Image 1 (cartoon, rainbow, N blue to C red):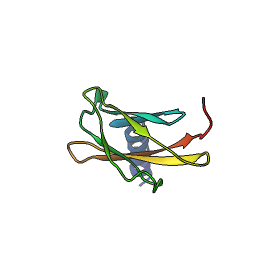
Image 2 (tube, one colour):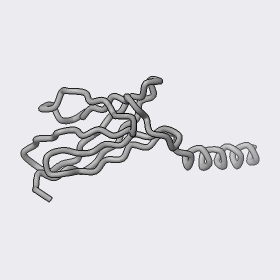
Image 3 (cartoon, helix red, strand yellow):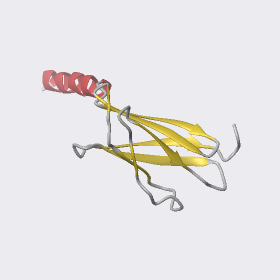
Image 4 (cartoon, rainbow, N blue to C red):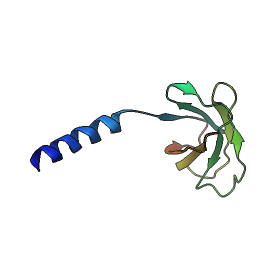
Length: 103
């Protein structure tokens, strides 16, 4: 039983360190650049949206480099949840802080 727990713990650590997708967010003064990669390759045509910003209900498509700019107009600085859905249907999300101050 103890060996089973040890093996399961080792597998959990291994799988948690393997990144199948990466969602990077770079906040700018009037929006954010989002880059989506899957297994180290750009995820072209992934659909990206903002989950917790009701003012922005649009979805955006990544280009062939896996990048897209999302315009964000909010009245205060806060954490925003970005969601990406790849062409294969995989769903990834990430929280990122966005400031309303000009940088």
